[in-house]
Image 1 (cartoon, rainbow, N blue to C red):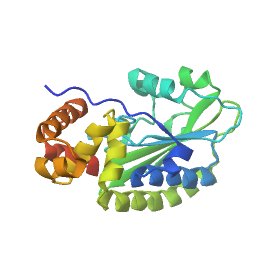
Image 2: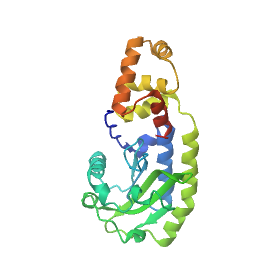
Image 3: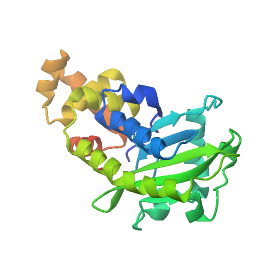
Image 4: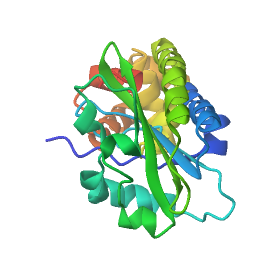
Length: 250
């Protein structure tokens, strides 16, 4: 049975904007656009996996705008996946099959309570859902301080107007073939070693073992070993699944 795919490490906004991965850069710019419309102390954006889970697939990008915030992003990320997500009224599984683009706290019965975020003085205030032909593919959430007001109705309406632009940009980047270098960077974020990521990125383009060995100056046996380890770490069964996972379709 394939092993469970490693949880991706969240990318800080500044690092994402300089990333070689087109999707990471776009997600950083998406947070710029969303927080320009609704100012937030912190915001996060993530792809949604095929089971509508969130924060399980790279790139997860985090933007922190409050100078007084000192967040342990990785700890919060882990805790959300472990337990806090089940209590989140914005959680994508709840909205995957509904025609929803933007939700404010007023749409879910008030400001959602999360002890982990509250310990850092934060609460979730708005969520943005991004779709591909109706299927939920990405999710962003905007947070404010506990003593800050909810986004006004006009701010939520402006989010709804910006959402189609962000959605279309995300889809256009998703349709652009990734370069092996960008794919390797994404695979590193999923827990592969540098060499495993280089080999897997080339394999995902359709390169043969001999072509990979020649390009990286390694033996055929080494190529086979790295591909086997990469697939096992990612919880995949084949090169086809690897290529689909990098295209965002798995």
